Length: 430
Image (cartoon, rainbow, N blue to C red; front, side, top):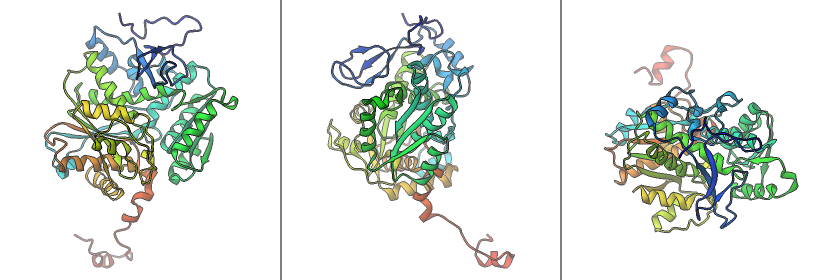
């Protein structure tokens, strides 16, 4: 029988992460005790959180969620966090706007309803606040004193902010040539920010080495040894979208791919909602979006392969520039199982999509959002995405972080003298 999070007892010395029961291998299914590990001892496959979730009273659970705080902690009964998580110091991300994008829908020819899930409204202006908030609770449970990560930018800022709020030291690692806006935002929270010469994949390998060294003792790397918990934060996007649609699943959703974890966890969230009776069981299609300059999953999908071959990233969408995405094979499985697809767009198409979203809906997306909107348009034009169905597009970050991408194509409409004649001469009077 499933155990409700608030009724589950945790004797002294037992980790309290609410309904989380174990870590389960995604490859062989072996179960491991809860702990700061990310690889299966049996087959070295990736681990994810397995739960004892509340069942039998979907209406009661739905009401409890709706009565909760306006952040991700309203879903605490479905997450690996203690029941009193909302009382702890946190930057409290989530419950961002689901924008009904009628203007964009007209531009793209969507008739079935188009929504933009705008996660730029999170505390550090990206969806990474969600995953870090969950990882912080795991770090507390396991007694870590330093929070760390390898990052393409957004995660570094999210870790810095969450650590400052929760009272952890932070030390995060990024490629040395990131956008300046992301560097400043990651550094302002007072933790250590370290640039590494090389790509994100080089940074990630370094962090894996640091974990195995005595110098890394007491360090919680949110996307390495805390990755099973961290990834669960992306499920809250699925929960929120369903709740904001009136406890219904969208027919189609377009999700950017970096490591691929966000896409896989949104699918996991949808399946949990169905299993718990919180939404009606119905087909849904999941589409993945990549930049052409870093599109290993898209290439594998189009070639019909099950193996994702690593690439060297070369794209303005640096938050998606992971050449060896850990969840790539699982993304392929989900796209095929749900009758979705994985597509990519050029840098020029990305910039055009950023400006399209801005001028139609007043949403300034970072490059990852431009990739997602650009892929949505491409999928509609190719007849792959059905414009007559309810569609959700994710914007995962704020365009103020990637100003360099659009600066060359935007700017002043005119420079005039301070009088009406000059204004008329500039042709701006009508």
